[in-house]
Image (tube, rainbow, N blue to C red; front, side, top):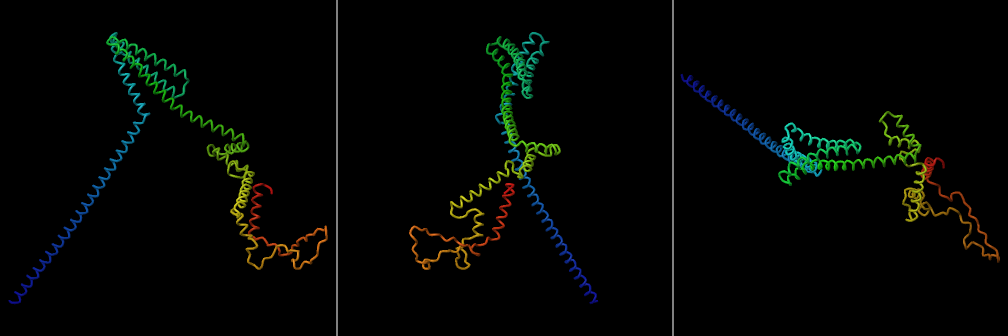
Length: 376
């Protein structure tokens, strides 16, 4: 009996411990779940904040872009030329609208069948004015433009006469005003076209000047270098169409004739250039008292002065044939007789040999002069 009770107590204690463990495990799982949920929410809040910042930055960027576009559009639309053209069109439109009512009233009072006549008059004036602009654009003869101007002036003048007659019945100022608006519209349009034509003529004049200068250069080139130009044209004709430009062909032809890819230079000019450089180097060496050119420095390095040599005592290149004063006999020269100088005698080893590098430099210089002049 006692053992059963003990066993039961142990089972109850084990069950209680298991329940406690299960509760702890469940609490730990809930804590982990809450932590994961908090982390997810935190990340979502951060992502939302980043997205909001990105959206705000994009909105500010779009706002700056729209402001910049409006500024550019304002600058473009407020240029003097644009304002002048659009202002002229506005004045022309206002002139047409102001001159039509009086004409309509005048012709309608006569007969309703004449109602389309005002539109025909205004239309004829503006169509002729547009014809003048078209003739200027296409470069038609001057008589065509003046004929169209005459038709435009006739239609506008007739409309002005009608408006004046209709308006003077009310007041003289009304008649003059209606006549003025009938004429000022085509006049403003003609002035605008005149200004536009002058602007185009200035650009065309500049292009004609450039074409004239280019033609003059081509004639001078052909006159001075006829053979080279002929060969260049043959090279262009031999190549496929558009594959070789005339300037490139001229450079190639010049190299064929004179051996250099620099147009304008010839072997004689190259030789003169080399001679001028040598003369300048020699003059600078003489003026400065020391070699400054590469050639002179190389020669000085290869052939230093004999005093700079450290190989033994100084030895003259030519032995002196006159004995020292102590060894010469004290002979009095005969009266009236001239002393005969003793000629120097060269011996082996008196002269210093040339350095091998100097020989190589001299041979290279000789080859260059031969290649430039063609003969030496």
